[in-house]
Length: 175
Image (cartoon, rainbow, N blue to C red):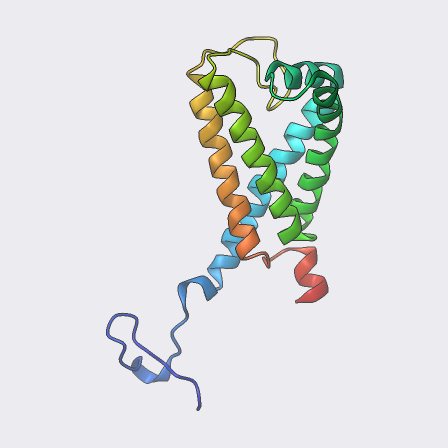
C-alpha cells in the first residue's frame, strides 16, 4: 500500500494503516458547503423577491444611500433584485457555484461598504436589504446589518475556495 498515513498529533503512522484525512478534505466539509450555499442562496432569493415586488421603493432605497448618481442609483435599484434572484437560484441549485459565489461575495462587499458609508456619515435610512417596511431604524441597526453581511461574505468565500458540495448540479455534471 503506497498511501502514507500519519497521526494527527505526532506525525507518526496512524494505527492499523488508516489514512488520516486533512480537515479540508473531510467529507463533512462538503456539508458545510451545502449549508453555506443554502444560507447565501436563500438569503439572496428572499431579498431579491421582496425587492422585486416593489421596484419603485427599491430604487428609492438605493438613492437614499447617496453614493451613486441619481440615474445610476435608479438603474442599480431596478437591476439588483433580479441579480439577487438569479444568484439565489444558482446557489440553491449548486450550479456555477464558484462564479456565483464570487459575484455574491462582491455584492456583499458592496452592501457592507454602502451600509458603513451611511453609518459613518450619520445618515439614517431604510437600507431596503429585504424590501422596505417604511420604518426608519436607529443607526445601531447598521452594525447588525454589517455583521449579517460579513457572515454572508464568509459563506461566499467558503464557496469560492471549496465550490463542490453535495446535492449540487455542479457535482452531478462534473463530479
